[in-house]
Image (cartoon, rainbow, N blue to C red; front, top):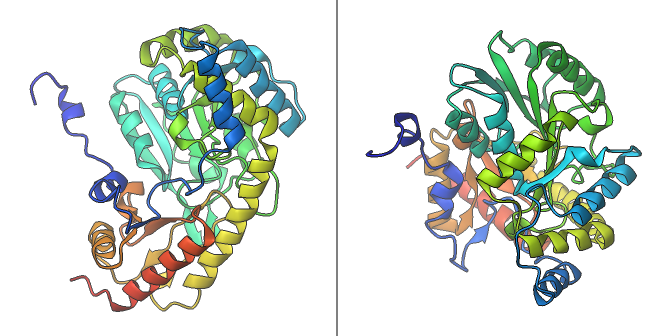
Length: 388
């Protein structure tokens, strides 16, 4: 491929879009493939964006985000975690994915190694690959009580060349949540060995039986090598807005301004004003979705429980199920056939890392009626699927 680095030319489209792009806009499809529901962003959030446009908020702003949004994020985090976040640590570079990308670029050189807790969202692997680093994986274990992984299992995979570790808790796609004592053990390792920990906490408000998941923010010092990534897409149903935030070591603040300018020149300004409204008035929205997703998780468990070929390690958080379909040889072929024959879109397991070829990811953030119909179709399809 002319004009493209060989390692970039070798990159492949992830399995989610490989399936979804074929019928993304087909109204007949029940879309359980992407990480979003079917409810539009709340009206007061949309009105705040409209007002910002009417007020002429269309110019360049600080590449780390407008000050009023950074202070609103600080207030939200302080209240949520009973802490006092230094506002210099907060940046709004664009989407949460841009936050992950910048953190990876800042930490890694060609020849370094990065460690990903897997199963994982496929774009994370691509983001690390673009740095030129070697990628290693440590896989969670499926158990009857959900997915499990200890900090010691992660530390055991660290090498002398490891310069960054990525962890997503609550996890997409498994719903695994890292307990506080394991967070402390992993942070101590990163602190001792100067490894940048990228902690993706975008599902922080989607935990079953609690209001918020344990956060590395609650234990990290201002100068610890930790970048906590979060955003508005999941908790406030704002996937299309593409605004996220990071909390970084204080000493990195200037470099986040520099890198944000290179990647995105900062987040869209009128969207930032909408995000302030989400933080200041959106708690009822967050709580409503928490209740919806917890009930949806039960619908999934009920639908798959007792099915001979479907084995589900129940999720503890996020809004995905990652069941194993016994007997299938290709998760991609399975998802394509399911889409063709039952008009249900799910994500193939292979794209979430090695060892997941028999799994599929089902997003249960849709309305309950639509979700139940999709689950019924999946069960019906599994009963007759024979790898044809």
